Image (cartoon, rainbow, N blue to C red; front, side, top):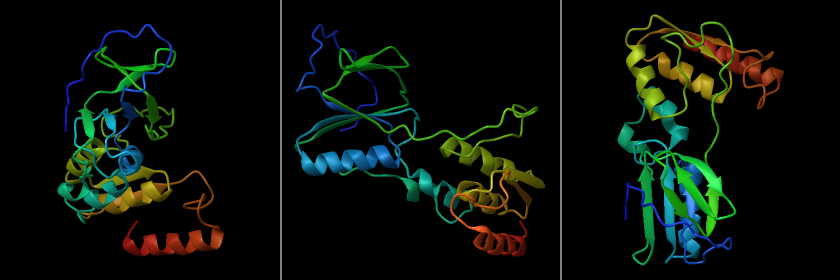
Length: 217
């Protein structure tokens, strides 16, 4: 079942974990939802509490670029969790966990609510690297990590004549392709000596760069 509003429980004076307390998963992205599926497959009667900092239903972040490019609708990204009838699953959307009290086996969310846990899984993902350069905080500068970012970029794309993407990794190149949708000129800037430097050698990267140039990037 879904329970977006957290429940404040009474402090636990014992330092020992309560085996009756739920398994708490912090993060409802692909990793968090995969952990929930694996847990429910092994313990169909488990009590699980899943925290998501965003107010949206869980979705597949990996495919955000497909939405930006117009290949997939938002509904196609929804990450549905099939819950066994005997399980108790609470999804708390729009509540970020700000502290973990490992001695009392509890987490505290941004609203000050606490939740006990028997086991804790942290699946909070990564954050985009934003270079500390002048002007980075000006209007028109975006990151590309979540649904709100993708919606902001899609709205901006309609008015943009030239978009510059900082980062020639996989996500940056996918963002570049997505921002081309309305015929916008797109330039990719990469600090390494080649695109996708973590995945490709020089020859493969040059082939990729040639392909992107043919696409107009």
